[in-house]
Image 1 (cartoon, rainbow, N blue to C red):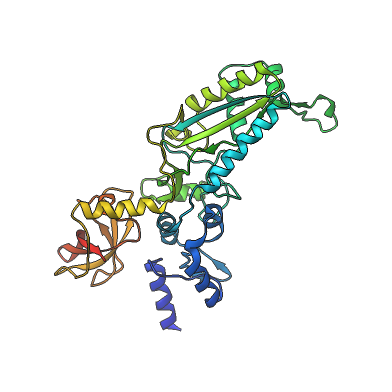
Image 2 (cartoon, helix red, strand yellow):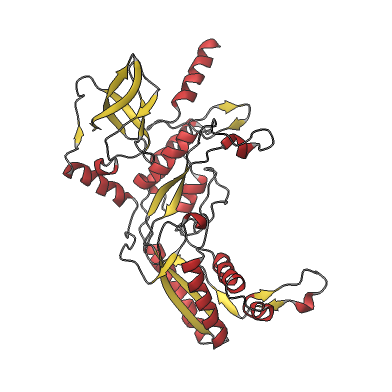
Length: 390
């Protein structure tokens, strides 16, 4: 029993490493899923339902997804997911055809294309195995902005900034009586809002938030916010800057739709949409950006990074540099980045890796590298990059 307890404790310390695959499934089933995960072409299913980085400890009947496993999972999405954008093109074409169809019934249609000034994240509160969600199309898997959010932003601008009167707001957006029995006063809005979808398959980027008072947020009555608490970095997916989105509206009233369109444009420019707008997320500019998102697969980013690594004089090496040990990159967001030593007397300990631009070397979270150890009075101080494991 003691041996098993020590082994379990060791697993908890190590967290999830590249190559580990532990899930609460029969072994043969888990192996089939692990071998075929690269064939999943729906990012929504991959992100919400298929987390293959389980390296958790079992506490009674509850399985916990470790923080390191979440980090590796997000990193793996970039290297293994290959969607192609045929489905997105078909969806775009279908939406535009739908607008053309409604025009034949006398509706006025307004379309516009706008691009993100900075990162965009919609649906952070959506439940997922990673705690922080993202709104993804259930069928096609691409990030999009639901029509309800588009309509809500437009209405917010009308009410908060334009100070539109109640009658105008009710006419354009609709109104519903709070009295369930007084349904006669309910009103259908004159303008129809469509989902905003990307013009091309968007590039996704990993971002990080760093709550400084985790104990206070968990239980504010017992834990005051204090500097003695350790920040807990939380990584999440975002849509990259420069991503173009298509917006569509339809109405039988020409004046209403033109006013709604102007409110929408102003809201996207000045208020932003989605989460973290106070931090600069979710703001747009008119037209498509020159930083247009790369078409095709997320895997192309990994290929580009590998190519950059070679051109920067940091190719993979097949031999171990003298005096070096293996280490795993566990944080590429903070500066300097951090690694976990995997062998030697400092095994399982974390330290900084200064003087290295990981992106220029084609390295990401979970990459295994060779480092040399710098000690001071026998204590681990930092690591020095020696090469990338081939």
